[in-house]
Image (cartoon, rainbow, N blue to C red; front, top):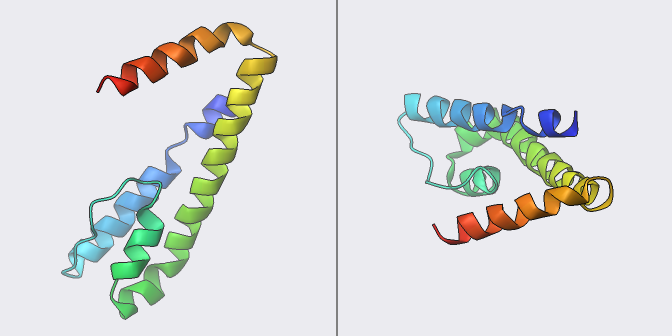
Length: 99
């Protein structure tokens, strides 16, 4: 269940909504990962949009914190309850380091 909760993709939907709303107002958000999107967007967003979309950016930042917590919990479960998953973790690290 933890993995399913982690994979809801709500943050991505919220980021896309903010990008779409700002674009429809004639602005463009800077390129950034979803992890730092809320902070970077608030720094460059015009005041009127920041007032309207600030609560959404706060929710994105909160979801980022929650996702980090899920990641830590999943990693801890892998180490304690399912040690066989460690081989998968290393292969994932190796594969992504080669990109």
